[in-house]
Length: 122
Image 1 (cartoon, rainbow, N blue to C red):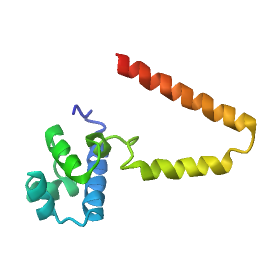
Image 2 (image 1 turned 90 degrees about the horizontal axis):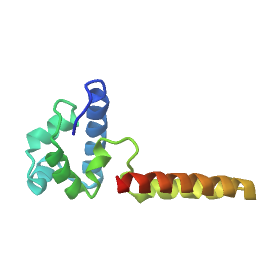
Image 3 (image 1 turned 135 degrees about the horizontal axis):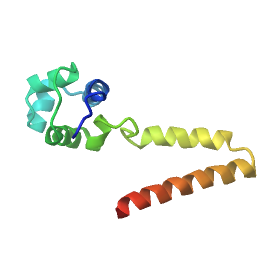
Image 4 (image 1 turned 45 degrees about the vertical axis):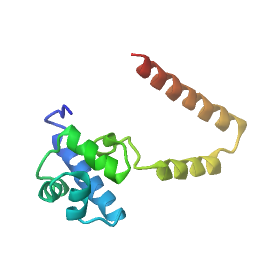
């Protein structure tokens, strides 16, 4: 995970906040999460306090136990689960009032689809 030095504080903050949030949502202590994931509870505490940068394989272990994609910890565009996405879909249903609104949304979805498909082909 090649963190740019100027992004490191932001990345550590995301990891810190998201790791603790998921651990608490799953009713896990640092000790329990450590035992299940194979990551030291002391290290988990350091990550949650923003004092240490986890290695990619460590994030993968924690993500597996917590049920998220490893990228969730470091990518501000990743959702923890589909709940967040479903909330946005409900909001869209409320604001799409005209055929023009619907065509605009479909065009945006098409752009995202083709952008991500092109990335996957590279």
